[in-house]
Image 1 (tube, rainbow, N blue to C red):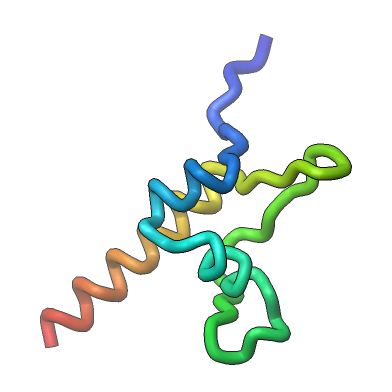
Image 2: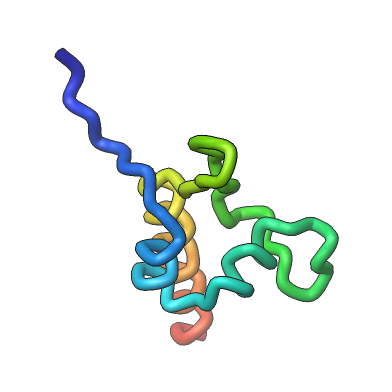
Length: 76
């Protein structure tokens, strides 16, 4: 049996983990939102007709990149 490492995070979890609002999370995934779109933000995955989630590894990678960028910015 395979040990599952990736969790699918529902919107309240993504909001809690990232500190972003619902609107900001959806805007980051929307190329039409020129001001807030972030191509590095993980795309949501459709789980059912009215259910979406984000892969935990993608959220973690995005956070790691944001933290590294912030630290590099403060070192200069």
